[in-house]
Image 1 (cartoon, helix red, strand yellow):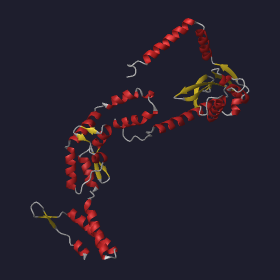
Image 2 (cartoon, one colour):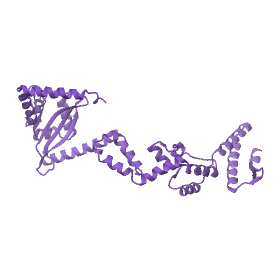
Image 3 (cartoon, rainbow, N blue to C red):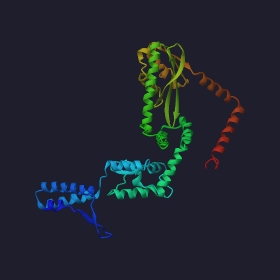
Length: 371
């Protein structure tokens, strides 16, 4: 009985304003017939009459809620309102508003419409969708977003990009995300790269390891003698060991100094901790003990007791592993110690140093400097 009522489709409907019958279009008739087929199938599969009626009505109501527009209709809209209208499945959105929301968030005339920026605009029929498109096209928000897009096309942002790129070498990895976002705002499409600063660090570390192993491979292939230069440093409360290598890095007999590694001393700054960290770094660089025993001939340090101690200093430990190794006290550190001892013996220099130190303290603690 329900199926008979549903299949008996009306050929017209009343206009609520004029109370006159309006003929139903062919596309609306097709939609009603498809709904009838859906409801008929559901009632046939249900055994209980009450359940059958409830299921049919729920399907009919849910089908009335959203009209799925044809692909041709959606493509026609995007062509008509190009380039700002874009498709998002069965919904539409505004490219200009999406860009403006990401850039500033709030524009002239009000806040950017969330549904247009995210591409979630939908309607129950074609007429309602067209009305929404027209309304958005003439809105102050969309006009402000269009002005931003036109300003972008005048190459205002490229000048800003060049200014930032001129200083990019001094920026931290944490600025990577902002730089990528700037490039996307500047019109670069389909930016497929890692935006995280952690990913940036991992990628650069991987490249550095490959480059280091390639240089070490060239040194070993040439059978070059090598020397090491090590020094301690402290940054942000952490201790590091700076390691340089001297040898034939080109394979053409030209000796050069290259930076090999920056080692964090996680276990402390004792001779044993520095020894373990240095050995681990050399092994990771493919400088094995067999090659170092026959080719490591010199190491340069700052002359501190932890480096050159006779009993358990770093050099003493390394000489047990590499018999050809000789130790050199860095000339720059020697000069610094000599100058320091000379200044201590001259009273006038001590007075001048105290005066400069107090002058620095005075200006450093001034209220203007604290602003």
